[in-house]
Length: 197
Image (cartoon, rainbow, N blue to C red):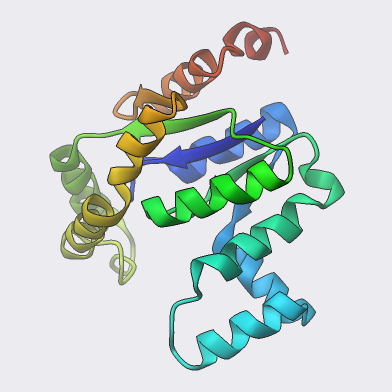
């Protein structure tokens, strides 16, 4: 099972990815973690990425796709994977498609966790008020508004891109964690199998 989870910051992608990892014995691949691991391991692609990051620049798509290519060849990714934090743009999605095609692989689904942004903002404000010692620096309404804007401009076009390929499945992210999990399992056509297992 090869999946991408889409949704704005705060939609619950991380929570749902963990549940899918546990249920289906697949791996969650965070591009940030993979980049850091490649740099730490001193791989050829990791050294290229390090030089670019040290210069304060964004790592280009071809290097990120190269890191994903290397990572999905590892044994733990054979049953499948969930991409986390990639692709963020249509250009990245196209690069990912080309790489998977070269490997004879394809995505099974792209799950969009749709949420109401107004409710998301009020949740963050409420959480910030309840956090002992104050909220994290990026856990406030202003920071979330900025992250939502970036998401709308860069990542939201992926919804149409994956819909046009027949891969997009949308679930209501405003429900409880269990209900969202069930909706994702149903969307993947594995709802009953998950209930039995």
